[in-house]
Image (cartoon, rainbow over all chains, first blue to last red; front, top):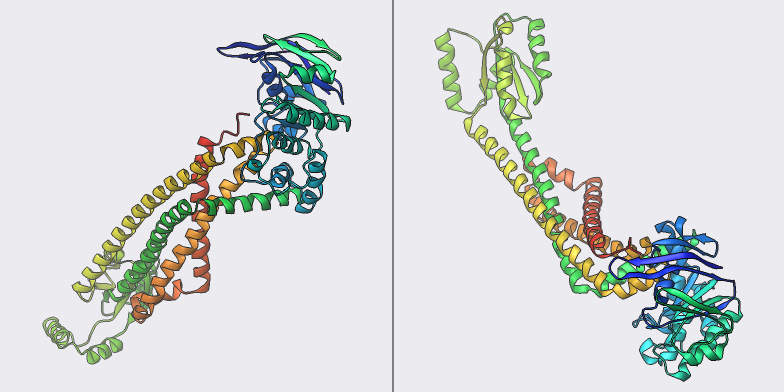
Length: 225
Length: 315
């Protein structure tokens, strides 16, 4: 599903953010990426969403070779990858329904298809009945679940969650993690970056540790100290 | 295809919402573009009207080529054919002796009559000469017509050449031609100036819309919106400025034409222009042309703003 082969990303002045990292993620896997701030976690995710280009190395996602990917094909790649951000990135002037529908509108789905699909996804993330609320009327955990709903509403094969629990209290953080587990259970590959030791240790999933731009450990059922 | 149509409809709707969201900026941008298009249309109307008026006045001044007694019909037709082929010649009329006398008798101008009688007495002629009357559509060509008539090769047929019936009319036409030139140039300059101002205002309006929606644009990029989907609403917004301005400019210009026109349409100089501008086809062409120019100016301005501020190429 995801293959990184000796990938290096160097920013001109800061030096290498990632250096010759190789990673293979199978379909339907749930992988947690851990590391200190500045370790290179976010750079890795930006390479996968093609917000950044690698300096060297090969990236393959869902059979797409990023080296051959043209700029005009990037939007279509992103439609296959769902992304959740720490700061939610919701549109404050749109309701919960509209924020989720936004992801379907840009691909040209009809209003009828949107009205049929969005409630199902909101139900999946536990936000049934909140369709008409605005983000400002929701708790942090609920906002993050709206962001997850928007990321998965197009049924992507891969979901990338960049520190989705970073701004949440433990209770809401676990609500979000449970939703991610449910989505993974339905067959979506999940890549989660987090600092939260408790979550990593309790989930007992594959844990990839990045430090100084290198993968220093990669263990199934791993832990984080 | 259906998805593309859905996306197109949403882009159009978003453009309309942008237009209403920045109502004051939209009004300012549309107003300046309306002024620019009104001046452009006004310049066209003035140019055509004054051009037609000058043409009509020019017809009143004729180059008269007096023919020698005994000039054969064949030679006369040769001169006529040669002159007819010249640019700026409207038509050539042959005036025989009988017609010349009839005109002399019906001429109410006593001064003209006395002058002609005196001339005939001096030359010893008993009848008025035959002539070719050349009507012009372009007064500036009169000198070349005179030069041709006075060529050596036509000495056997051409006796004399006279330009114009009165100098005042000629002077009026020259003034009108000169005024037409200045009005056209001035209007073009003003239209370009206002078009440039409207480009700047639309540029700023779109730039502000891009800044206001920067977070939304970033999210759109991240969730897979194509560059065209992101650009679309801004293009629609600027096309709306052009469309509305084009319609308003036509309303302004046609209000002027329809209120002034009936008062001057009986004057020969303006009747053709009034009929031309009030014909359905010209009205439609004017409307379509103004809308098209408005939309092009709008698209040009928003493309400038988007190329500078909407970083779609750097993913």
